[in-house]
Length: 377
Image (cartoon, one colour):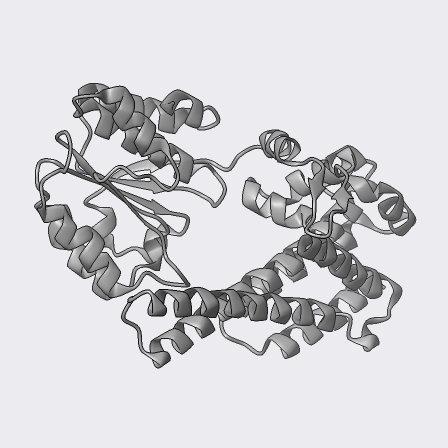
C-alpha cells in the first residue's frame, strides 16, 4: 500500500521504505505543497507501523487504512477550522501519547496542517517530541513549514514532497470526473478533455485545487479572471472589473463561515466545550482565510491569462495553461507585444505579494488594474 501511495513521490518512497526496514523514527515532518499526496502517504505509512507491531498485521493494516480509521492506536488530528484547538492537541495527542497501545505494540499520531497549531500547542508538544515513549510515533503534515517553530521542525525527520506534475494531476482529475446525479435527479456530463487539461495546468500540482477549478465556483473564478484581464487589455478598467474578484472571494468566505458555524454548533451540542465567543472567533478566522485564498487564486488565474497571452503571442501556444480558451487567447494576442504581457503577469504577481502586508484590497486592486491598463496600452 505504501508503494502505491508514493507512486508519484519517489523521494518519499525511498525514505519511508528505508525507515520501515530499519525501524521508524519517533517523529516525521511531511512537508510539501498542498495536493502532493502527503495525507494518503501518511495513512499508508502509519498503517505499516501499526501492522508491524500487531498480532494480526493484515487486520491491523486494513483498519488503519480506513478513513476515518477505527483502529484505536491510530489517532488522526485535523483542524476543524483555521487552527487546531489547543485543548484538542493537548488531550488527543500530548496526554494520549502517555498511554500504552490498546492493541499490538505501537501508537501513531498524525497531525494534519501542523502549521495551524498555535504556538501554545507547539510548545506543549515539544516535550512529547523530545522524550516520546518508545511505542509512540508522530507524523506532522505541513504545506507551510515556515509556520512551525524551529524547535518542532528540528526534532522531526523531514520527508520532502514535490508538486505533482500537470500530467499526473490531469489523470487524477479524469479519474474523479464522470456523470453525477444531483439531488433534483439531473445528471451532469463529463467535463470536456480540454477543460480538464486546463484545470490540471492551472492547479500548480494540487489535485484539490484542480477539482475546485472544475467546480462551479472555480469555473466562475476563471471567467472573472479572464474578464479582468480583458478589461485591462481593452482599456476598460474604469468599470472596476476587479470588484467581481472581491465579491466572489467574499461569497466564498461567507459560505465557509456558515459551514464552520454549523459544524461547531453541532459539536457544542454533542458536548464539546466551547463558548459562543470561541465559536464566533473561529468562524471569522475560517471565513477570512477562505476569502483570502479565493482572492489570491483569482489573481493567480489573472496572471496565468497574461502569461498565456505572452506564450501565444510568441508562437508557443503549446505551453499555454488555458488550453480550453485558445481561440480567445489567439484573438487577444494578435498584435500584442509578448514583453508587455509578461510584464502584466509580473505586476499581478507583485500585487499578490503585497496583499500579504494587510494593505487595503480594494485600493491595491484598483492600483493594479490601472497600472495594467497603462502597461498593455
